[in-house]
Image (cartoon, rainbow, N blue to C red):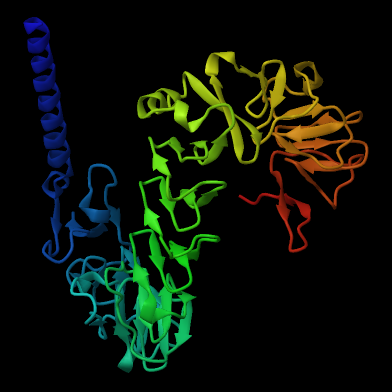
Length: 437
């Protein structure tokens, strides 16, 4: 035992020395001096350098992995940095090493924020009577009244802006929301998330976590209303589970039939209440909650020993993995019965599943139905069905891309090419396209 302990200590010391050597080497080769480069003003920016009489841009100063790129036409003698990303010389203004079209080096005003104390590198700049955000102009922004707020939010006397392409008529001076990140801002009664109005209940709006927020009527996940989830009784139980007064949730998906008052999380995969045992939010049909303790749940979580098979969209059975026979990635056999990804296939036996392409296992026939990666190809004729490629197929009447029928292509005249794909139009139909490179 003592020998094993010393072997472990030696291996740990070797590992630590290796990490230190790698870190030191990376620091050494990333050093600007190793590349004959000198920062113009490293206190302001670590991205702009003079190198062999030229101006180079090095993203975040990472010479080792990224390296420097010469800024074509930049004048090294008059070059100076403005902030981390902006710089100028006698001829141009630059953002991240690229010339800012429409900006003038003789007219540069950096924009800071009263809402954000760390706005020294906001990305906003006023030049030549234009307002720029990350090097792009905000069309129509009024420079004399322009104010940067926080994140990608700014304003002038008429509009609230998000980045350069969203503007909202100004009602009042926007305000930060307590405990919120920079994706949020309050605009009178409105709450805005990433430039979109998500709530008109600003007075009741609260931040619950980085993901969740709430007002009087809704729970929001990253600014989107979570259907069925209600504020009353809402609780984040664990990284995977939540509940409200009505039911529990696996992430944001309702766990149907769940009882929030007795709901208990056993591990990331298994949970239970007085009614059911649940596997990733699905009701487990073949095990009772009273049969499964926390240690039992940890055993069932081992996917190399146990796996789930769907009886339907919300109900599963947990069975030993060794007892499952895989036909393709989408169809399985257990006890001589066939299961798809989301349901058990009634009255289907293993011999009824015919795989057209054993190399890809993409196209499968079951009775009079053809499937592409487990999704039914509605209307496909199995008798005349032919595979063209891993994505294209056809029958006597139609050409298909993945599981979708193409509306503008005749099977008798269709000629396959590697550059072909399909895209959905506004009517929900799929049409043949040619990729442009």
